[in-house]
Length: 278
Ligand code: GLN
Image (cartoon, rainbow, N blue to C red; front, side, top):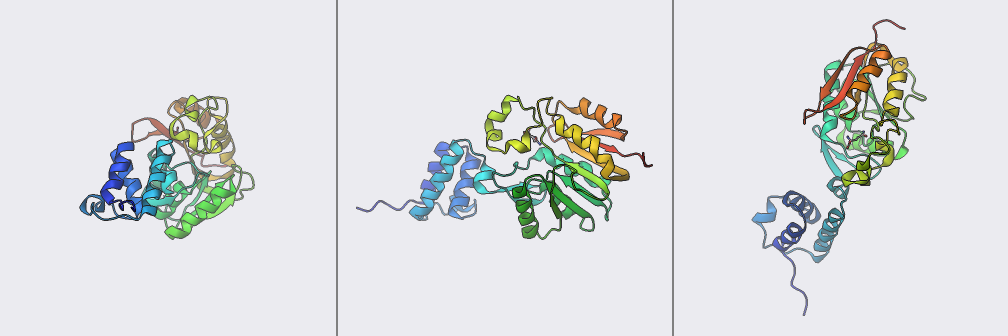
């Protein structure tokens, strides 16, 4: 006898036995291609066994710890839905603090540079908010640049892209430079735990010196690419606030201040380049 065709309710029950409710609903809804409110309103509806199998596979991946954003291939950031792949860090609410800190510093026709753009989250959020600005996004990994371009095209946003290691090969001056660089210490045990273990090491590891190597390099090199009075805005770890403030000041930045993230942790430091050429 043929097996009974599963229903939407059986899919939801299957997933909810294995995952927290909101993850279960997200994965079932996406696998079956139905909006979340259909899961309960049309729970008797039959489901194609192929779709059931697809749903069970996504549930298994989540049970193995894979982040939901990688399973869905999408993540919301700022007001954008961004495609994400395992080549890029998953955009985080923490990083919306970087966008929020930078925006008031970006006048409508500013030149903006985003270093280490990943899927393009920060550059695209800024491009969306400042359509007249010229936004350039760089990443050392060509796969990130490909993804950033795909996101830009899908969202109808305009950013120039470059494969580049920090400022290498970047010409011209920018009014605002933003970056969420790798800043986790190489020995941080969190790298082998939770979501982080699925994310690209290159996007996370900031070296063995408290994770500060790339942040320090950006602070050192940024003035050569900033216009006078331009701003550098860097996301960093919650325990790096003092080191960042010191490094910004030692490099001659003025009006240095730290912004807190939605959990009230120090997360983004900004500083202004002196108004005259050094
Ligand atoms: N905010 C991330 C974390 O600590 C790290 C991101 C980064 O290195 N840029 O989970």
